[in-house]
Length: 301
Image (spheres, helix red, strand yellow):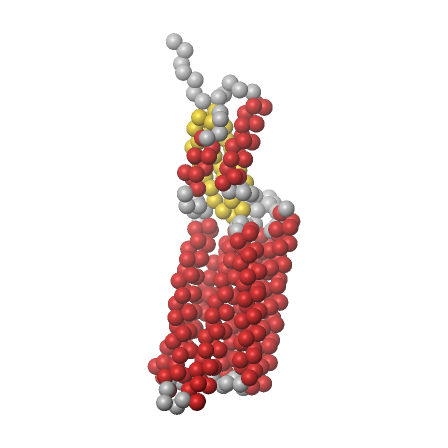
């Protein structure tokens, strides 16, 4: 099961890299062929996407390695680190987009060359980004991968970015036909700012969750749910010292329980198995460690 999960995650990350290579190459060729600064800017954007995709692919490969002597909890934190770095790239991209859009609005500089290939390459970009963002998002949700989730978010923002470029191209074309509506040429800049602000908000939310994982913050509400589930197991008198943290997609849970100290070792072991199953029903795939403690016996008179 774990091998299948790693294969799916690696395939999703690798397909993202291939898509980024194809789009970057296509935009560079079309940009130089048409002399379009807008397309060349998108080529630079896709080059950044390629860096992010390669970073995610490397992170997924490393995080799938088994635990060793220097990483006793595995290498899952590499995924969290990759997600944080990619969130930083997303925010940097948004700042760049907002800066360029504001510059256009203030200076009135609009350099958009409208050709058939301009529309064609952006349409192809949207189709590719929709496909790979869906694959990445589906795999990220299935295996709780923050690195793939960040990659999916990155390419879903590219869909909006490409749509804004198409809007700008269409606005320029429409403005050429209707000179009495000069404001149309600024439509793409306004739309770009709105999209960038939305992406900033989503990126900050993802970044905060990534930071929480890196500093071993416990999942919200999990402690209470674990205590309730464990204390509902027959033979458990108390559950305490609950600790939980994520390492990549892997959740680790450690608990202490009070049980009847007079039972046999075999019975105590069976009870801990039941406790682990109760927790794994709450968090499938969790790595659970149970520390049983004997229930204090009343003092004899």
